[in-house]
Length: 90
Image (cartoon, rainbow, N blue to C red; front, top):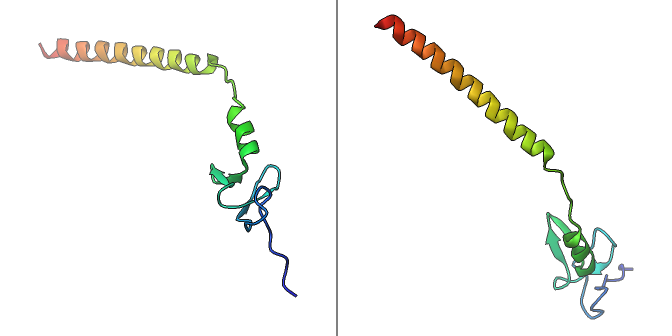
């Protein structure tokens, strides 16, 4: 006895191609959309795309400021070292 063919949740005349990883609906090739390597139905994909993650920009700015200060410190040390070296050669 062969297993019953899986059909699309939106199109009963079409065979299922994939399953939505969020709601487990069976989907045909027209209904299935792959996003980040995962199959989704239109409803779940719309919900995922509209969900935004708001990240704080404070750590990013602190990293930029720390990098800038480090660069300024290293540059100042290099200028003092090169000036001392050149003064000894003259």
